[in-house]
Image 1: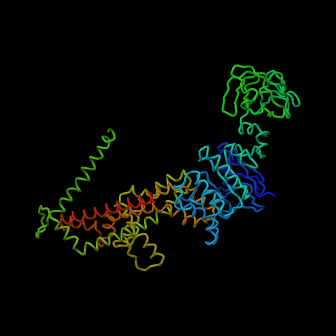
Image 2: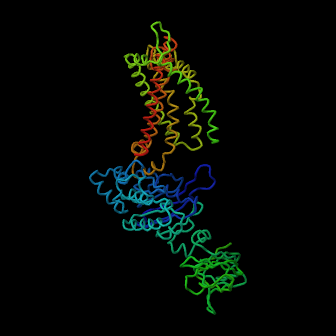
Image 3: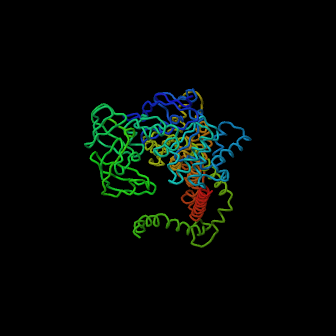
Length: 350
Length: 277
C-alpha cells in the first residue's frame, strides 16, 4: 500500500523561468526508503521541503497514508526531518533536543524520559545525553539529529543530505547506521542526496531527478544497470559514451564495427553507453557478442580494481578489471580486444 | 607596522579630542570650590565627598538609572518585532528595511525632539486627535514632564537596539525554527522555546548599550523634560553652566564615566560567560 504519494507536485519560485519542481508524481510503499538523487538545483531538496511542509507547492498534492496533507502546516504533519546542517538547538543538551518533539506533541513528562533514552540508545549516544551540540563531533551531532527526528515516531522520516558534512570514512559508517535504524523501525523514509553511491547503497527506490523532473524511478539495480535516459546513464556511475548509428533492429555501426544491442531506438544517429565493469579485455581467441579492437592508453591501479583507458576506432572506452584477472597485466601501448554483451549496451538517440 | 601607522590619525584625533579633555576634567574634579564659589587649584577629594554624601545625588542617580533601564527595556521590546520582521522579509527588501529602522540616527537629535513637540504638545497631533474625537476634554500632558522624556528617550534608543539586534539575530539559523516546526512546535512555541532563548545574548547586548546611552543622554531629558526632569547629565550641565561649580560638575562627570565603564565591563563579562557557558 502506498504510504507516501506525490501527485503532480509543482513548485515555481517567483522570478524564475522554469519550475524548481515540475509536476512530479510517485508512490512509496510503507517502510521503504526512497532516495531523491540528482545534481544541485534539480529540485530534490525543494521536493523534500514540500513534503515536510516547509515550502508550499504551487500545484499538486501530497498524500500520507491516503490522507491529503498538502495544506497542513509543518507542525501538524508528524514528520521527522534531519537537516543538512543538523539544526540542533544549540542551547539544549542532546537529551533535551531529542525530548523537544515529544514535549511539543504533548507526551507526558514521565513517558518522555524513557523514550528519549531509547532514541539515544538507538543511535548509540546514551552516554552523551547531557552534552550540548557544540561538545559533540559532527558524526555525533548527526546521530542526535536522527534520534530527535525519530523519537516522536514520525509517519515519515525526511533526510536532507544528512551525510554531506561528514568526512568520507565516517560517511560510510553513518550511512549504514541510518539504513539499519530505518529498517529496524520500518519508518518510511525519503533521503535527498547528490551522491549516487549513497543512493544506491541505502535506497529501496531511487528517483533520479533533473531540472525538476524525475528521469527514472526504479530500484538501485535497475537505475544502475538499465538507465532509462541519457541523463541517468551519465549521472549514475561511470560510463563510456560512443557515437554510433542504429542500422536495424538491435544492430549498430560504430567505428567500422557492427555491434549488437538488446534494445535500440529507431534507425539514425545514436549514443552507446557501456559501464566500465561490463567491458572485458579478451584473452587469445575468446569471443564475445560484441568485440572492439583497441589499444591501452593508460592504466590506473587502485588496488582491487585496475582501470584501463582504451582507444578504439569508435571512441575511448574505460574497462575495469579485477586485480589478478586476465587483462590485469595489460600495459599502456598494448593491443587489446574489448568484449561486451549485447544486454549491457544502452542506446539512446543522439 | 603599517597598520599601526594607519591607525595613527584616528588615535591622534581620539587623544586630542577625547582622552585629553577627560584627563583635564579628572584634574578639575580634584580642585576645590571656595566659599565664594571660585575654583581653587588643589589635590583634594573634598568635592567627591560632598557629592557622595549628598542625598540629592543618590536620588538623581536612582532616577537616571530607573529612567534609562525602563526606556532601554522598552526600546529593546519595540525593536525586537521590527528586527524579526526584517529578518523574515525577502532578501531584497531587507537592506531597505534595516536602513529605515536606523534612519532616525541620520536625523539630528534636536530636530527629532522638535518633531516630538509637534506631536505630543498640548496642541499637538495626539492631543488634537484625542480631544477632536471627544476621548479627552483636557489635553494630556505628554511633554515637558517625565512622560515626555520617557517617550523621547525610548524612541532615540530604538535605532541602536535595532542595529544590535539585526547583527545578533542575523546569525540565528532559520533552520532551527524550521526544525522546531517539524518537531510539532507551533509558531508561538517556536518563538518562546527556540528564537527567544537564542536571541537572548543579542537582547542583553542591545539592552546594555541602550542603557549606557540612556544614562548619558542629555538633550532628550533637557528638552523634552521642559526643565522639570533631572538626571545626572542635566545636573552636570547645570553645575557647570548655571552654578558654575566646575569641580562638582567634573567630579559628577567622572562618577558617571566610572559607572558607564563598569556597565560596559559587566556586559563584556556577561557575554563572555554566555559564549563559554
